[in-house]
Image (cartoon, rainbow, N blue to C red; front, side):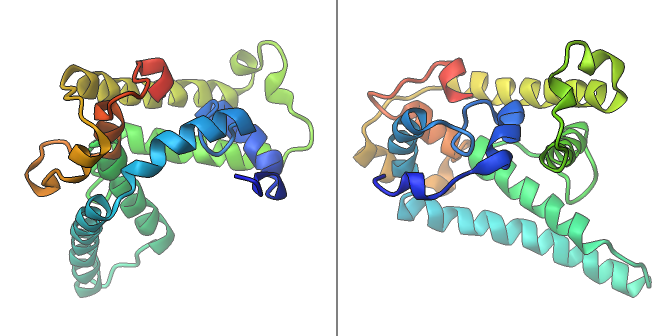
Length: 206
């Protein structure tokens, strides 16, 4: 915490705020301190060991597809494939959400990819024209960004609402002792919601 000011997030942190709000990456120092303290317990050994199996599951599916493509002599865009696998792993591990992007492009995956491209565009554009009044009405790519963010927010709200509905509060020791292989929802989101003494409103989780 003492060295946090040594790592300037620069323009990327500023443009990410449009996508992530005050999430861990674009958060100011005071917000970052509070959220880091709440999130760190979730990354305990038992949970991480279980999530490795999720990585393996997604990797096995990709390997199967690549073998099939090789047998058929097809060219594969590996950057796109690796990105899809990463999204599947993040979706399942963090939100218990099945993107299914390794098998096919879903509206949520498409929205996520296009939103990240918009972040890249904004990071490389000196003049922040998207902050002008009506920019999200007049400029096509800003209209698309607005629609994509609505899709992502709706998916996130669904995950949060479901996790809140099934909340089972426990202290950190009890949460760490859970058998994640037998849980219907072993996500990081589930851990944060169930952690006793932590704020768990939908707004705070977002």
